[in-house]
Image (tube, rainbow, N blue to C red):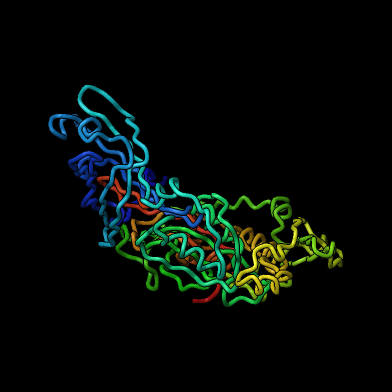
Length: 439
């Protein structure tokens, strides 16, 4: 984590406030540990179903009825914690989490330093229930039902669920709810997309609730912040260039771009071999990036352009093959008569979904950056931000923005970090394309 870097000198990174961290005993009583907190880290990711938090605090040994917190509550796991913290701009996060792990990391005669891992209520509930019913209808409606059903997750948090255009019928087969949601996410087609051009969703939680969003919808959203990275002195954050919301304190590139890995994952060209067990016919479908790019919502101007020397004029190139039985007539909905009439209708359309989703997920991780900024708790995983990066050059006074790498990015992972003298936000950013769009 970049909080140890001495270059992080913005005044807005020097403070933060944990106003409440009350932990309730599973038996009786409650204690607020906010005054003893040494370090707090709050995490969100579009690759994780729920949020999580880690905190380290000092237990003086005489905190609760003459006992330590570990003994007095006692801390054994699943304790409810009411937490409130804010950044230097008064952006607040108020959440209720539950103790998932307890780890005393330093113990001596005078004090104990305790590390706690906390998760959302839904994370624990997900371990206790299984999906054992049949679902019929629109895929996005299944996500909503799994989250709100009292026999499954039963959340009362805000839901931001983007509608899918396709239906999908299935049995839960005793799977966990969040596994089912992420499994369904790979099968969704955005409601505004042309069939066969794009597919794929993300299911995740932020401080604002649960979200189910397509890749294209994430990439076409408006930027939430515009940030700049340069080496020009900015009076410790008081002199941000006009048009920007803040300055990037530290940046690292994480572009482990490997052509062979991209080919093996089918990022640019892939095929699917479909077999119909009803008539024993098979079909070979070869979606290629050139055929879908014009319909995609891109963060930049264009997807990577590869050397044409390796195409040699062939139009049937592919670097990955997937095989699938056509799901036809297995779970038709409706009355008995309606089910008979639908017996030859496909339940899942792999021709327009399977490899399109795989290609889109892989494309999204084309460019990766990690940045550290002053604590900004208004940001969430999945948000879009715009960053300007200077071109390389010795004369820093004449540097211009890099129009290939700079531009819109999606927040993949987010970590808010608070200590008694630091308040930072670290972001892992991703985008699918090169070239900067003008905003």
